[in-house]
Image (cartoon, rainbow, N blue to C red; front, side, top):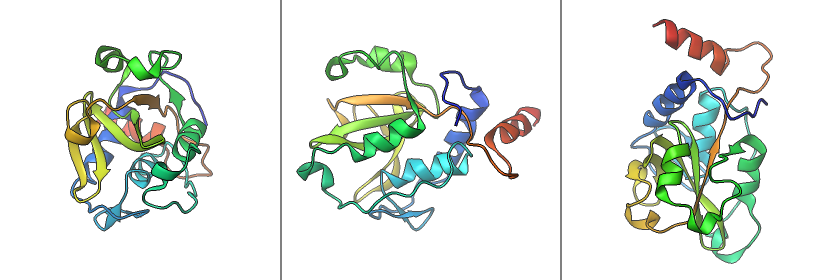
Length: 184
């Protein structure tokens, strides 16, 4: 997978369009089906898969409250295998990253990971920072302010970028979709 820090703005548009199409999908632990049910881990995986940035990723079973009882960084590890952390955030004191730093580095389609409990355990897709889309228990997939909405206020966060599609054996990848979108 190509993992650089540069990306066409069309990639971000495609990702955001896909993410918006999930709004209203109910919350369902470990669900991955648009309109039927999804959680905050599977939602970004499915959006990035739909956009052609990643292939199918098998996620091992996890309990709904795993982050409260374990310190193993399950979610963070999967994200780090498939995305590049934003330089403006990486290497900084993650505990004190200012909103202005995040706003300067987060682009539409980027991924933000929040710390809940003992681990990095809640993911969202940036629409235009601080506007995000994420899956929330009792609400499903919703738009939120990534800085000011209830459960996110004061949370530590890290930003990542997925920048290129995996090698494909013949189907349509994100680059060809981006070229098509640019022509329209």
